[in-house]
Length: 208
Image: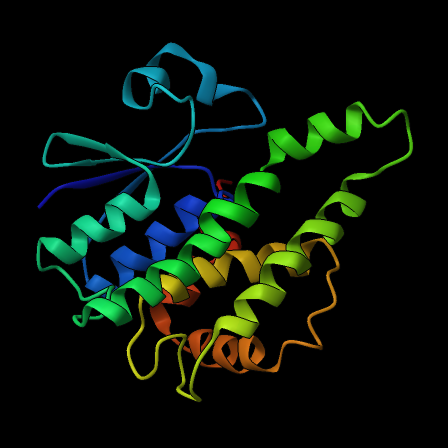
């Protein structure tokens, strides 16, 4: 199985996939796409990803986009169980994942935040935007967590955990206070002990 990840080191969506591949024990190579240089808007990347985004993944010649769709593909194809088997538990796992991937992350995307700051008339800095929207998402995520398992859905790592790790990284990066999120902090302590999570950290994959 040949996997190529078209990656930006700080992309939350790409970060999720690096963790997923690591947990599934799948070898992959990385081709950097530098967002700061605008490479995501170039013709080569647009052929892979018509949205002009990262990540894209080439798996045995098949190009896929959208990190959650790729994670669910890995689950469906039998590479790793990233979703619970029971329908209700699967729905709850997706709901947690969507709080971050579909509600919080898009608003805090670099291009969105830059546009908002640039049009604020000097009344806002990037950190102000992030410190407003990231806590809203994480507070909701915290309230939706059930049980006291080591991970978001109990004893098994799921897609919800893959979404949580990059969002907490971003929260820390932008100085968001996480002290009022005891469940998330406990889960992150467990997740950050895992070799696959450690290996996927942006500092470990940042291009030279």
